[in-house]
Length: 467
Ligand code: SF4
Ligand code: SF4
Image (spheres, rainbow, N blue to C red):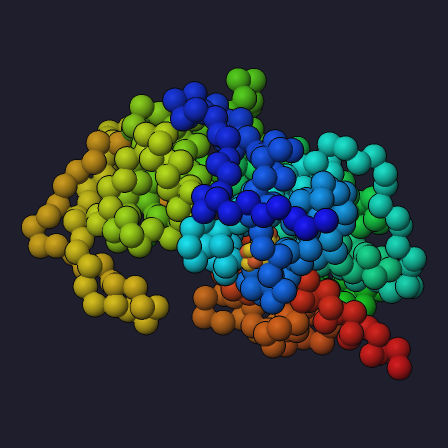
């Protein structure tokens, strides 16, 4: 029977918590499609034979095929199609920058809004989690062993793909919980941790072993992993080393890196009334930076009870690198945007605590190498922001521990591990790397794409050694 397409140029809106309520709680902001909404939105898809959306997905999900299953209300069939390409669909459906990836190439976007691919992916993954009780089949062992460093999105993806090929896979994670940036970085209100845990449980169910509190480079080195019988190692250890601006006052009490601030809240649950994790109960907060991490830190500070939270960003609103949806959500929750401004000094009181931030106004000059217009200081434009907490969200780089304990592993000037590109082979035989450890801080889905590519490369490497 021919499918009745939904030609509405607008996508089915996503139900969300009311901004005035959600700005003081950590519950998920976007509530997800109902069954009926999902089918209605799926009917907007034209099932394009050339699949332009799929070509823009870093893990190449067969998007029209899974959406067609949603149209025919075969939700489990839809899930199985997504699961062939993605190990963490409930995560991607929530935090992927879809508007710059799959949805950016959707033909429906030419004369209206693109199909809500991420929203449908989230619906299908959630539906599967809530309704499917069947355990995934255990892969047949192939007799080979691989080690993964880092239980973030890149490492977990590589682990899942290798386990499905029959490898005995162990993931070594430095923190006490698996998930990497999904558990310490992205707040509960964007990605509930129960969902991350469930995705990790799915990987364990197909045989992936996860060893937590294992700091590779301290407790074990990569060379020792090879001595233990692993035939290949994948480094997916992320980029957890925060950057600061090196301006006066950064060591005052009340200055946090976004990494530390978010880790205290997300991983250590500082927002719970009985939490033992110390955190500043701030009145006025400035968050420096304009990416998703800055939005997460600002919105978390608001939920922690701050009266006023200001994003300070050196370019304009148009140039904010954060996802549009996150910026809109932050604005709805009352976050103030002080764009074209840059801090030059953090001011302290007699107790050594932050009591203000001296800033200068900026103007946009000529485009730099990246094509973005470079901000330059506007003369005589100094002003002071009254704050008691400052959160730096200007980026992170990879931790040097692994590269400094692995002879022969090449890194570039920014501390990122150098690879051959596609498969992630490093300068050491049998050692692969990908995700933020190679690119510097990027997106969850790009890290997952790198994990997938590395799993394929590791499999070809190990298989070719047998011949
Ligand atoms: Fe789109 Fe991300 Fe899902 Fe790929 S994984 S289809 S890019 S939302
Ligand atoms: Fe559907 Fe858009 Fe992909 Fe076409 S491009 S198959 S309409 S999601």
